[in-house]
Image (cartoon, rainbow, N blue to C red):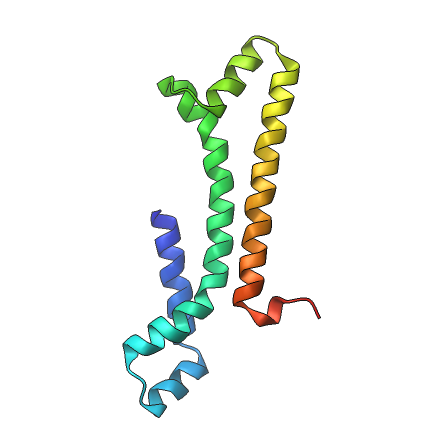
Amino acid sequence: MGYIARMTRSFLLWQLRQDYTTVLRVKGLSEAAIIWRHALYNAAGPVLAIVALTYAYLLEGAVLTETVFAWPGLGMYITDSLFASDVPAVLTATLLVGVIFMVVNIASEVIQAALDPRSRLA
């Protein structure tokens, strides 16, 4: 969560240094309106990509966390299947993690394309 907040701040500060925000200030818009209506909207695309990649790290860490704390879940299921040499269960769980990761990335790309017209296909 801290990494996402730090990256959001970084992208937002970068947007606030752009020329269009200077034009908006000259036009008389308040700083809050510039941040909420323009800069945060333009920074949402890269932040969304960071969130999608962070989700992959969460899936990766689930195996270790669930094994160490003996919490039931997909990570513990994969670990138990590995120790029992249950190859079909390991393959199925790995495929499930891969499909979840692909769905999250595709959803991120679709939302990013809706937010940023420059990234849409011609």
